[in-house]
Image (spheres, rainbow, N blue to C red):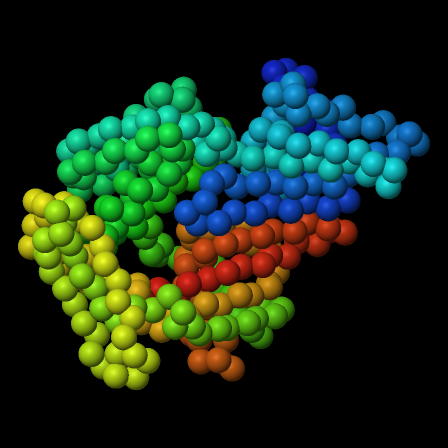
Length: 322
């Protein structure tokens, strides 16, 4: 059984809808924003109906075991003859996604760009690690704040091999470095994993990379000859800055070798719910039947609370540095 609590309201006036909850689904995806909470509640005249109106800027809080696991803006509410009330809320990263602007940064880090975007929108900053890598130029017109931040993080990753991600907690947005924690949840086929599905694919695999400048000049290349002999030629091109360094070129090729010039593997599991298992987090997987016994990163997570039970559906990626 799980101990959940749902509050909806604004300012000092909140309504407790816990006893009306039929089903609640909390989900997220790495690289996307924001996390969402979808709830279905009883809506019968036989009991006190929940007072909600997304047009009033109401907030939604969701707790598990007394701990806040979601805080966001109510953006959709609906009622029908099924006598049920549906709510959908988004955490405050929604403001990064639903606001557009024009941006021009020169010789700035992703950390600077992240903080600047939050400042322009008046969003609360949590923590922000220093990404250090200086991006030569980043110019975007009529695009979302989220896309600008993700572009900066993508360039940083390709040039350094270090991943960073954005998350929201208790109304504050943070920039964090993806790391391998000292301890992590263990998902095992013999205990908490209910179902699994593993797939391999070469659809997005590329065997060649050419780095070019805006003027068409070549800055480097790589060919995975062994793989190309097996699956054939699949070429990719990336645009780089004229002043890219030899170290940055080497790192871009290294990232390409790990992420793109390899057979893609994906794992989906349904397991007993654990709120430590969210997008961006690391878990240790043990599924001997498909020779998996290693750490993996969560790409997508969906946590479902229904009839007193908590289950989760996860999509995981193979950590290529393991």
